[in-house]
Image 1 (tube, rainbow, N blue to C red):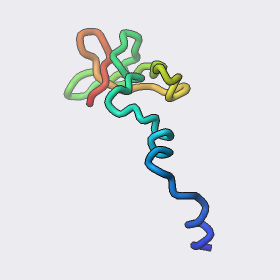
Image 2: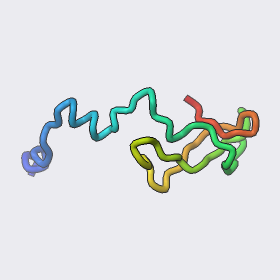
Image 3: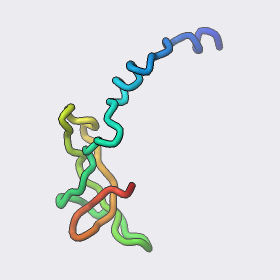
Amino acid sequence: MKKSILSLGKVLSKTEQKEISGGMFGSFDACSCSSNYIVEWVDSRGEVCSYVASGTSGGDPFPGGRCLGRVQNDLCCPEY
């Protein structure tokens, strides 16, 4: 049983791995700041908010997905 589970998938090349993850490291902008947000909760550091993930030039990366961030200057911006 263990052997059959381990052999279900094939090893992906670096190109295939990059294609699956989008290869957009550093330029991924689906979660930029937004003025259209919901305050989810408030903690000792301020308001935690969420907003709909925007599409990128490659399409919508998270259909129905939401970004999480903090309210700064009346905008919800991701923390990273």
